[in-house]
Image 1 (cartoon, each protein chain N blue to C red):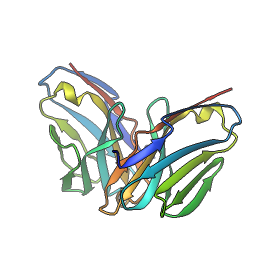
Image 2: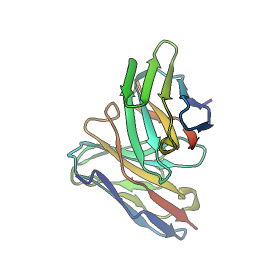
Image 3: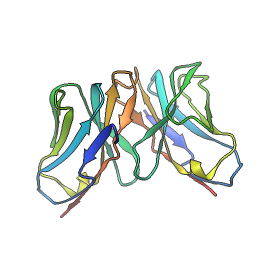
Length: 113
Length: 108
């Protein structure tokens, strides 16, 4: 099993550009989530999904969109990148939600100029 | 004030020392996670506990629900234990709140 995979590992964007961060898991987990990690702060939840076709906002959703068309994939879209979105992004999955062991992807480091 | 506080923020140790990392929280919880973030950035779940104590190899995690406090202990520390250790709580409203982490460096 590959676990949770994320692409790309590193990306540089210019302000206003759009991009999609990919996340996939092969563990048949229903719950998937996106976090951002910034210096001096704990991981913060951007969006999450409890199953295919169901998504919801987390703590810091502004500027990000998600969709969940399959159990395996949970892409995160930045429609118009801003310097404030410079961060490290982690995708995570679990079988049943935040009360279960979380499996994290390797992260995507994003720099917005 | 953060709802999840970890101490210390940074910790250095000599190989073989006993390490303790603390996590205090101010919200009602149903479970607490300890995570390890490697120098390369990857995050791995170490423990999830809701009461008492759990042990895995040289790692021991304890939680005191009444005192709203958890500790992560590392016995016979080794340089490969160098990482950031993160505490996260599952609140009674089913959210995960993360601490800012404790950076541990173990020197040979």
